[in-house]
Length: 267
Length: 328
Image (tube, rainbow over all chains, first blue to last red; front, side, top):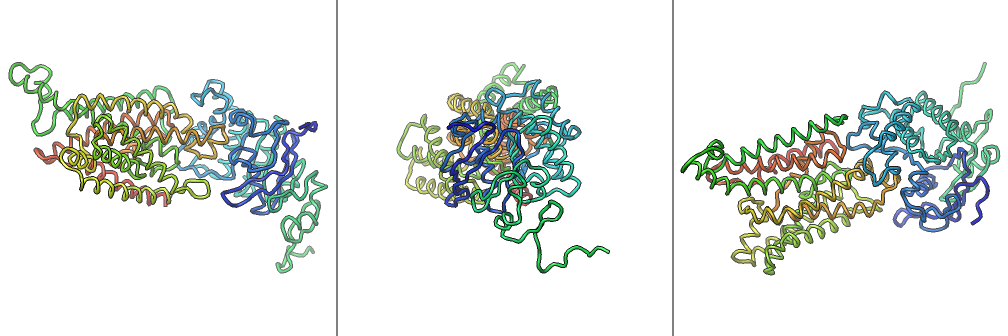
């Protein structure tokens, strides 16, 4: 179990299931400390499942998953929760909850027995909300926020959690262009300040090519490529992962259509 | 509504709730087949004072039992709603109350001592919870629609069981079964109130201790897991404590529906959904609701009595319908 220097998380032949359905089928991956790793793949490729296993929301059914050289499942749950923050794709809030209280939940693994927040918890939560530009929402009901606001509140929660790893599931999923940009700029800035390890799951190739340090390409529950953007983002790899032809335009990759008219011709 | 933020706001909410309970309890003392004058009770001399004190001594255990049962059911409902992230959860709708009644009835049929009927009701309540949760589980998670359907099926099954037990029972056992089916506070005695107390206290203490974890569940089970909660263990503890409270309430007062649905809903609108406030306030408000409903049941058609379950269902069923339309 010798940990390669810089490697924080290592998966070997990792498997995970939803009931009878196998979602990860022997995945190998390395996650380095301080990097932004984009996990890229089509729907059903197992990328969200990988995050859930890393967050210990879903147990692995086989293989090995090492966190700092130790099996993740052997660590106390609350210790993992102090070190790993999970930002799910979307949370359906049924009950009202004040944004500040939602951010304070990030402090739950730090307290004793999940009881009450301390003044320091409150201070950290407020600072995190400020860093994510959601200070003014503190007393608003999170259930009534727009998608972009809610994502920033959840990012603030990950910040307040003081975790060294952030797991972000489709962080820009349903955001309009302006909110998408604002969210990514906030993420980039905060990552820069804290040197957090970020694992973000997406099917947006742009997100990976603009932001990631390294890219992991998944297909059918396995990693088919992993490495720097330059190594992984090639027309061949993307075509294999997404089952559609890709073309590069100025360092960015786009799906090629044979039937759509395409952009207007330049004069 | 997201509730009071400040400590003083929370204290005010508790004081208001407590004052309301005292007020409603005073009304509960006063009304009934014979109207009791509170001034006679406090300062009455001679025959009038004697009479007032006799009536009060008879009504006191009834008011106390109503308060305790209401607190138990409301607390169980509030905790289940947070745990399952579902405002429609309620020990009555999920079949827990039915299971408790069937457990108590079977114990009565087997001539087990009435002192053990809370334990039998608890076993029935746990059996119902386990069965309903197993039926509602799909792909590793509890499905809302399946949960309500499973509760419906469990209720049908347990009421059939109760009817079958009733048809072969006789005498005292048959009378208690009727009582469990209808929901009834009329045979309250100081002894029964005292017997309910330890169950109520234990179940409440466990649930209130789980309040901060339940806050994480109210956002979602995955949310709780990602924040370091041992999800399976917490679910087990909360289900057991809620079953204990429901079993105890049913053993002493029969099946009284919708309290666990109505009360947390109302409290949440005023005080928000922080379980550390919502749970104790729900207990207070549940006590108030049931004391009030009991007073209405005695006063409305005096000297006859309305079944208390009819009053809570009259309030709760429309609320359920409204909530169902909103969540669908």
